[in-house]
Length: 102
Figure 1 (spheres, rainbow, N blue to C red):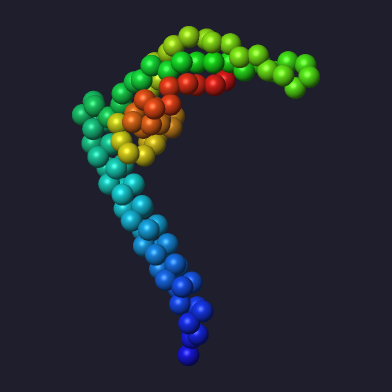
Figure 2: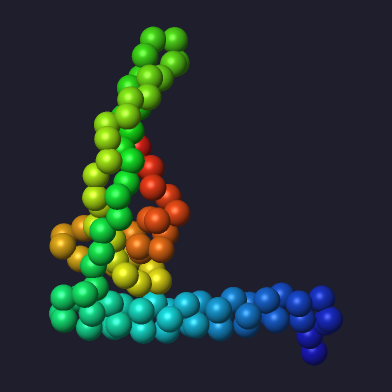
């Protein structure tokens, strides 16, 4: 007979298991839609991103230089996808984070 103290742990374990399964299924569907779009020529996009260079100086200081704006490729999907020999951030995320640090 199990005590009542183990019940919340078991419920949290079951919830975590079903959440993980749901995320894996969602990623699989997202990947399938992305690949179908990419094969037809519409899975990738580009977003203009501001580029900055951080140069370390003496005394634990840093100098930040603006390098300009460049178009960065992105995946039209919910999750990051691997295409063109690199991981591409989703376009919805890249439009909200338009600064790139080097």
